[in-house]
Amino acid sequence: GTYTIDASQAASATNYQNIASATRDLRGLSRTDGGAANGSGVSGPVVFKMKGTFNEKMDLFYVNGVSATNTITFDGQGATTITNGASFSARHVVRFNDGAERYTVKNCKIVSTGTSYAWGVHFYRYNRYCNLDSNEIDLSSATSGSYNNTVGVVVSRLTTGTQHSSYSDYGSSRCARDINIRANHIHGKGSGSPNGPTTGISTTNNYYFYNTGINFNINIEGNRIVDFKSYGIRNYRTN
Image (cartoon, rainbow, N blue to C red; front, side):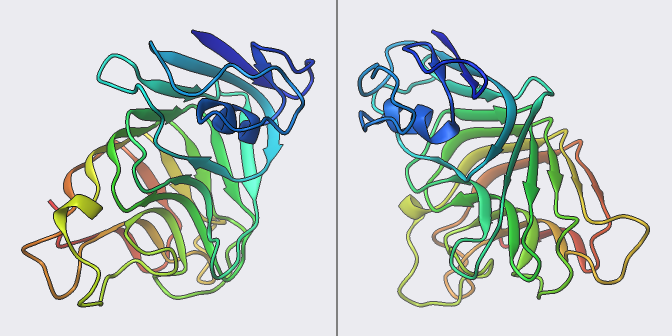
């Protein structure tokens, strides 16, 4: 079915006042906005039409019942801003968590207010068939950090770095598959500043086990990436 996420409207079975209430309800957890629960899982395609500014992180997890038909879409409709700060251990604004699949996030403005640490979107560990489409990803607050620390979009099995260097962290089941990153505008502070974020999009595989645990079918297409001081796209041992 189709639902809304709109803080200006009352919480109900069809409207959520924040993103966390919607993502928790999908997993059968209690809502934070006091609205009626819809129960765990999906039995058909689900669309959340979003409107407004949300000062929170968007964390997406595996949901029971998802399939090629039963997808989950968060549509900002060009009228939604998701904004949040960052720390060393929580760098993201939007994260596709380990096991998340069949999600689309589109038409949103995603803003990190982090300075030394800032990731706009993070595909973390095992994600399948997820889409990041037609969003603006704004890292203009980032003023420092290495290429690991201030990145627009990260595909990585780590939460605090982009390049795997551990012998213990490998295995094909823990990597991203069939991810589409397309038609996004990913940018820093503008005006060619030398002190802005470092990397537009970073996709990396395990440093040692480059024949196993490979991110596969990562499609990067039609994005506009500007004002990053090190890399536009850093694609390291990824198919």
